[in-house]
Amino acid sequence: MPPAQPPAPTSSASSEASPGAPSDALAERHLGRALLVGILAVGAAFRIHWALNDDGLYWPDEVYQSLEPAHRLVYGYGLVAWEFVEGARNWVLPGLVAGVLGLARLLGVTAPGAYLGVIKGFFGMLGVATAWGSYRLARSQGASELAAAAGASLFALAAVPLYFAPRALSENASALPVVLGLALALPKASTRRAVLAGACLLGVAVLLRLQNGIFCVGLLGVLVAQRRWRAAGESLAVLAGWAFAYGLLDWLTWGRWFHSALVYLDFNILRNGAAGWGTAPFSYYGRVLFQGMPAVTLLTGVLVLVAARRAPGLMAVAAIFFLLHALQPHKELRFLVPVLPLFAALAGVGLDTVLTGLGSRLASMAALGVVAVAAVSGLRAGRLTFGDVGQYEDSRPKASAWDDAGDVNRLLLAASGLRDVCGLKIEAAHLAWTGGYSYFHQPVPLYPHNGPPRGSGLYSHVITPAQHASGEVVARSGPLVLARLREGCVPDPGYSWRLP
Image (cartoon, rainbow, N blue to C red; front, side, top):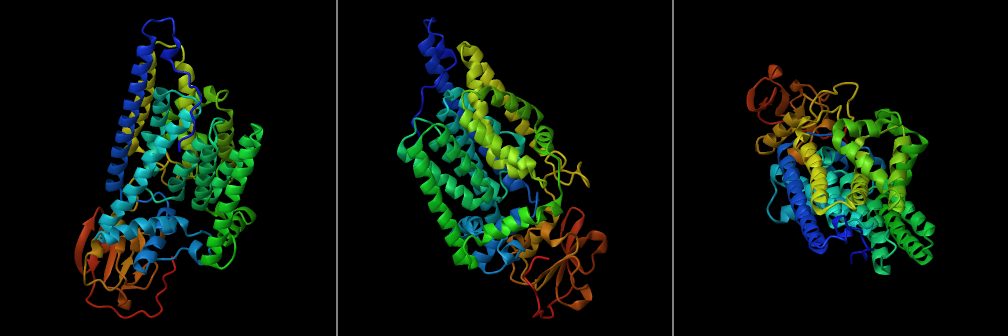
């Protein structure tokens, strides 16, 4: 049930002295709704395009914490990352992906090229729904339909959210319950049912990504600050129930209550293990967001500041999430994905403040201008480099952020259709930076670049640079080839499914 809406100031409707004000306000509402539909449709088109035209990786987590364990659940085999050896992750995200993958299998979609498109498309559509959630959150904070729609475009159409959209990451999966949960629970006019539903959604978000607990604490803090004691107590009870579910799931899957949370916190907080993948200064997130989408970041920042007085609770929750991540030594831009729709909603509130008092035509032009800024960013998303998204900044910042390892993954897809593959070695990349069995989809050994030599006879095919190929070249992608070395393989009873 959507939250009750507080009276929302509308830009042109506030000019009561004008005889045409009521009709102008109605026209503005119609424009807002039409604009929202158009924004979501274009956002969906952008996401589907990238879901079907990018075979690369941003980071191995999008395969080995989601796709690969889901493939093991549905098909019975796949590489096992350290997180699923030591139990540093729970099974909610892989279970979600396995549900999509299993449904595709029931419908006869079993070729990896097809089911990967389904999964990427599913995550892309989650992003579209998240943009709608950003609109709902802005409306719940009093923004007009026109301003809320324009604000939502800053998530629906902007380059950085589009870059992450098709990737099977916990940040993407959890952004939707975060934004809808806050839209339901934060407004003072929310019904009891809406508050409880919002708390439930935030509990789901924590199961998908532990760091979303910040939003839960933030919600409770806002409710207490507003002296909504009953809502705070009931929300706490609901969140405690989801915490129990978290612990129970870990007990059922890992054998210890809250096992994944304890292992994760021990590794990342007590041992600072994540720092091994790089550290960055406090300014990292602001700098990288500006590099990836400068106009959108600048416009959003200004509008968020304007919104601070009208939506202090939402502002505080979003700011705390941002600041806590900025204070952590290890940083990756994807960590901010759950808070980006909140900033877009705040931008909608800020825009509504700016539009108040303007005439209908000026208000419409200003809103369309915001959408245009977001759309131009989205159209330029294909130009993003790894430097623009804050990845590999010390090694290859000018390299395209798209289709990294795409050549290897396309050759894995080609190998998946060969009946004579009895073993495959990838010499052209580290195994963690490939699509693994989610792309290969053959229950035979898959060896890393430093695995057994070609003369071992343990594999029949190899993915390698063209100049190093021997035997018959079966497929090509860029500078790499899939080559058949021999017929038949020597059995390997000691093969390990552990990701090296």
